[in-house]
Image (tube, rainbow, N blue to C red; front, top):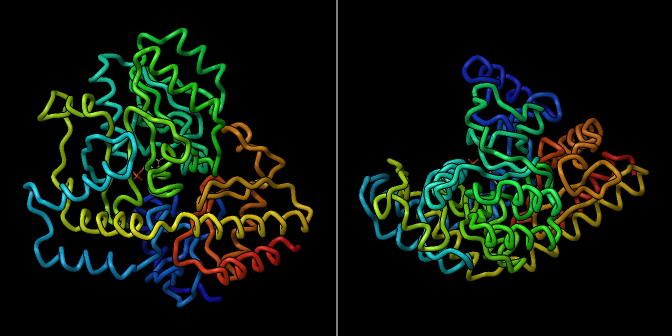
Length: 426
Ligand SMILES: *Cc1c(COP(=O)(O)O)cnc(C)c1O
């Protein structure tokens, strides 16, 4: 398998962009070696510039639940291009996407469209503070909410992979009001509310963590966040940028029957184009400018191409309900991977909710950042490269979830399991 052109292009990129990439998760820092340069994608497959084909399990890190190049999504983008790519004025398409989101996501009564998940969480935190008139926020170690200054403490995703939980350039003042707690730990959460309850603006959390590998919440934990926020007048801010439209059409809040006050969305909501959103209770959203006083704006927000892709994607998900099929396929995959690891005598644990999942190389169970961090990342790196050599593209870090799309077939899954067995020596 030649990687010569990838090598050439990446070396040129190193001179042009920091680390040769525009987002650190792409640089293969968690597995070593050089990233593959991708030329195109179709359905469940990625093709690199050397003509190698890979079964894709990252789906652009979540958005591509319909697979690459879905006909209807492409047609919607094409039609939008011909009408104009950006106006800086209201469009009817923004109503259509907002209606879909409000219809689909149980707790959302009103919504504001933005351009990235980072913008969504940054704006939602500002709104929670503006609404409550309070400063302090709680986040959980290993949860990732984008590169918002106040949230870059004990953050997951590339921050976890690269071991820089606290970024230079983030001032102590910015994070002074951020309280970091262990995930799935009701006791420390209750204690934090007892100590700071009347100063807490919000609790921001991933309802199923994807950014330290997949970590499932206990029912107690989600219920405690809800009860404590209600009791102390803090905003429950569920970050569904990854889980929204992924683990169920209505996201984790539908799956678990838990109702947050604010929700952030991204990834799937834009169907592969840059769009994200925050929404929730109308009485809270009405504090956002120009309805209220909390400032938030965006030149390209609600962009015509991005809303077209988002509308097409959510409509297809609503009409086709692919979730039972995705669940079945990913169960087949993770059962096969678990069996491969068992047969190879490798310590492991499997975490999965619907079509997001992780094979952890460690005894488990993984319940929080401390237990996730015990994983054998060297073994994960070997496994990753063993799969790449066999045409399977897994997340380039132990601490990132894998995703399936509706275009993956049972044959793809079985080929992946066979590749994993070889890679692990099962
Ligand atoms: C990806 C992600 C973000 C950040 O979204 P970007 O579009 O990358 O800025 C925020 N929160 C969660 C849970 C995510 O998975």
